[in-house]
Image (cartoon, rainbow, N blue to C red):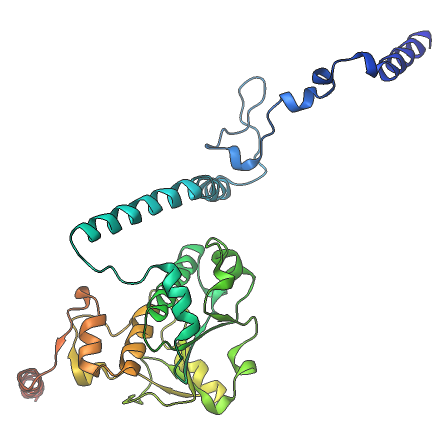
Length: 318
């Protein structure tokens, strides 16, 4: 009892005599570094005093993903600084060589306010978050970034919308600072609730309808799905169920391709944009489609060779 009283009295003395203690000692907490999870560079593991590993609050896979995000956040500012330096160097070399690099960001922002948009809209449907792993969701966001970049540099940009912009999409997009100020209209709601049904048109390679031109006052939907062909025909099925018009790009009419006719979001977006700008289908497809697709101009010899192949196959079967 006496010991307890003496301890209390000592504490009281310390508290009442704080005026005699130097400020540095009172603020001793500030001398110790404050760490957060973002200061962690590696996963140190959890061990007791005997070096035995303790149960983790998270799995190794969760920790790996978290540390990957931590590293990305810690290096973000440094990466951007390096990108700015590289951009300055490119501009300097271009000026020395009298090469025109095109408008800078400030000029593009001014142009955005001045350039009239076409009365044709593109909607990217992000209602497929639950069907994709994190890695594929990031790919979708990256492709949306490319669409935005292509559209803002166009002399006649399209109206650009993103629908079903849910929590996962917001978290993924938040990695890109300032996206809220981009010339994209984000809707949390589904496109079917935001636009007149008769003005909607779903772009899907499974449709039997071939598009020849893009109609004014129409909103063309691109499915925001990277599924590696796991959900083939899903967008076509959705369009039919919702009673929305649908169609596919006329790839077979203008080009031959060595691979499947499945295109990325940004490729479809750019093809639509170029055709709306007045570029011919053939030129737009050849310009936009990547080399790996092996696209080349469809001509009469291709048609003859394919007809011969078909006749040979039919003769063999008969």
